[in-house]
Length: 334
Image (cartoon, rainbow, N blue to C red; front, side):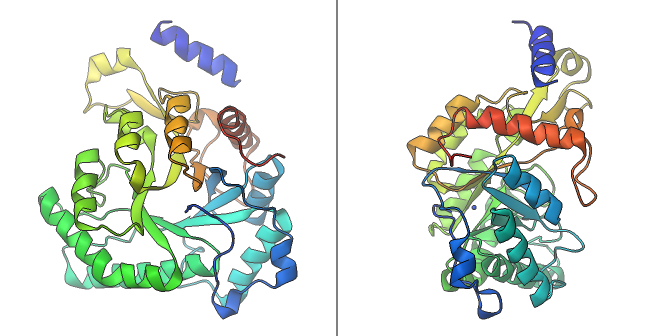
């Protein structure tokens, strides 16, 4: 099938951790036994989830259409320095009432763990420790982030700085709270370890299994890196997964080159180039049981994640992603 025909076919056809039960929470947010018993039993398989900003209606939608969990992204409201005890307890209550888990949280922007400025670096590291504590209180086992960045520095130096931050600052907290953490491989200036080679340099200096990857195949596609091979080579370090696809329009690429614009776009799973059966087979073969969270950045199926509820188009995108991925995963029965 030609690239154009394949895109038309897709367009028409489309028209956090091994056990994700509640972690031992801090006293202020510890669920009562009757509340914990109301949650559906966790499965030993990957947990289909969605990445979303926090809103009760969004958690309720995710549960209603069959997702097992949500991954909450940080924003001006969902901030470890701003949330009160009562707000945290309210989030837990909302999740329990909806019958869905808060699988993990994501703290990317504003958390440069290796910022060249010592003051900003110390502030980012201190805030990320508070993010780990927040994740623990919400019953999570994993917190996602970026690897950080030092513009102009070599990968080896940046890896050494990240290893020092993890080994000295974050590892003791992760061990105390029984948490894990990892970075998404999104190519940006404050995320240096986005290629398999750079990832391996970091892991060579951080042997603890509490540091790993929030593996996103879509970013590797646009870097022309094989995500299935990368997943196999890094299989022991994958702690969470973003389910997002990438479409490449070769006629545009031919005209503008890789430094141009408009030759790729993010899609929901199944409407791009990722070989999902092969990728999910890798995860199932290594008994990955963490969260596989649909990160909906597909403009074809709705716009930004704003407001208190998803738009109808955005809901359709999440529904299609769930139907597609469910074909290859033996998760919880609805």
